[in-house]
Image (cartoon, rainbow, N blue to C red; front, side, top):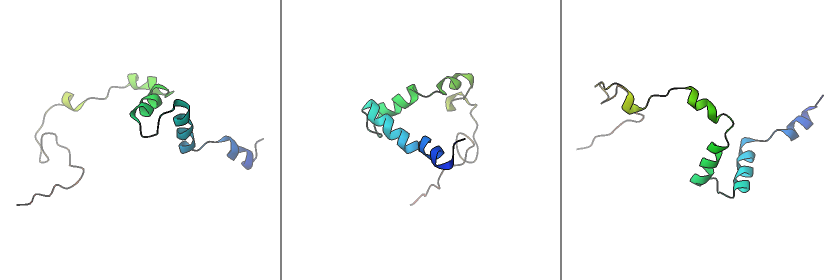
Length: 81
């Protein structure tokens, strides 16, 4: 049985894992190449092909009170005159 102290030593924090990957691939965390490497090495990457996510251009066009698509804006739009 693993006691609490041993268990804490075997678990890595998400940020620690990101920093280790950054060092291994020699890309800064803010580099687009780092993001692409994370995508390429994602063990769940294959699941994306099992789902169909429609693109905005594939959705039916409707004119609602919020514009082309009937979706509320994320933040208020201020109109000044």
